[in-house]
Length: 224
Image (tube, rainbow, N blue to C red; front, side, top):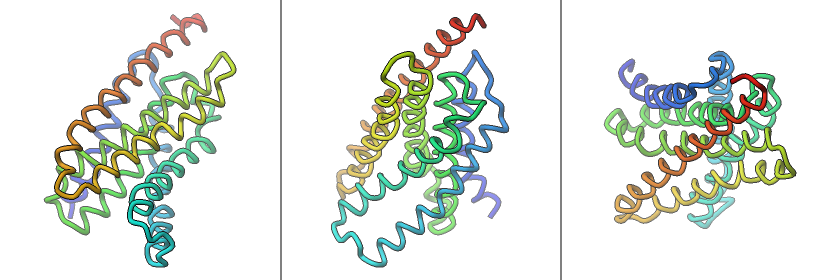
């Protein structure tokens, strides 16, 4: 059991550590990041409950709408809502790169609990695939969401609302694409590899841009 739990939790913590260590200009309080991670773990249960009720009641009969659109929208909305209500106006959200960290933290909190429950059901044999696909994809969706949250909070123009809208719809579009690929039975393996490479490239590009925004932000505050 200990080995299984370690295998389930390790990918999320490793990815969170990676994005945390990428920030070389300002160190975010670890307590606040762990709180964001914890918030992410909590939303797993209402999400899974809603998904269970919708499935059992056959509220959505079309498989594509149920497994792709509804599932993607529900998960990204809850993650977006947690950041908007509990983190966006937090005093510790004080530079553009923080959006990356909080987005990744909330997403990885959700992904970690989901991963624990999945491995408890299907066994440790699925741990490697889960780590490189669902867990990492959730982290990268969170990075994209957090990037636009950071842009929205520190925008010096009239694009605050635009970036806030993108903070939901950009990761949602990526999540829908990911889930859509998984519906291609027999072919999804050939499609998921290039998509994951794109997703990593796209998310790391946002990390780089957020770091540049951070440098500019610190310069404007005369901190560097």
